[in-house]
Length: 208
Image 1 (tube, one colour):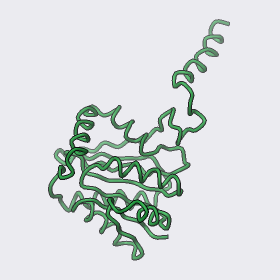
Image 2 (cartoon, one colour; image 1 turned 90 degrees about the vertical axis):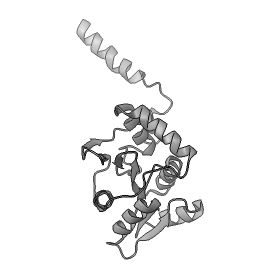
Image 3 (spheres, helix red, strand yellow; image 1 turned 135 degrees about the vertical axis):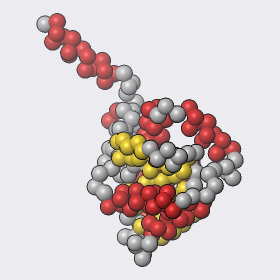
Image 4 (cartoon, one colour; image 1 turned 180 degrees about the vertical axis):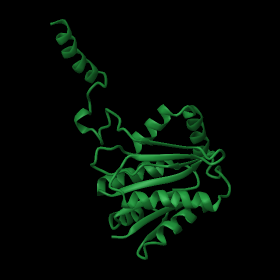
């Protein structure tokens, strides 16, 4: 099955073309293609690589739904302000986190989470807003991340690169405890119950 490379903006197209260069059968489509065209392409691919010049949250949420429905692994790289975000390999059914988990975890644990949320709101209001231009090095880093994810057996790892300082933050995605997609057994349960259920036996043992 071929690779599907979805792209948005000049940066996204440059990354997608580099990723697809190693696979003569690769499919290239714009990220804003019609839903039926995207779903048909996802269905015949073995991996979906997304490269974008700015965040497109709604498009990636739709894609996450489609990939989980069709059982296709996928990953996204995108420029966001001064950061190159190389998202995790999302593997439906593996229980290692979905796109919703990724957004929630990165917003909660990064110091600039509030700034990122404001930036996303600005992107949503202005389709022309985003970083202008890119360097060959950024294209190479982004493409290498996507190619590595396609052949990787390990899902959940992600990397954020500060394009101004060169700093790199690597981490592993932990699924949300109440995510109905990644942890269906926990759906509908109060998140604090797991602490109480673990604490009561421990206290009973300590007081015995």
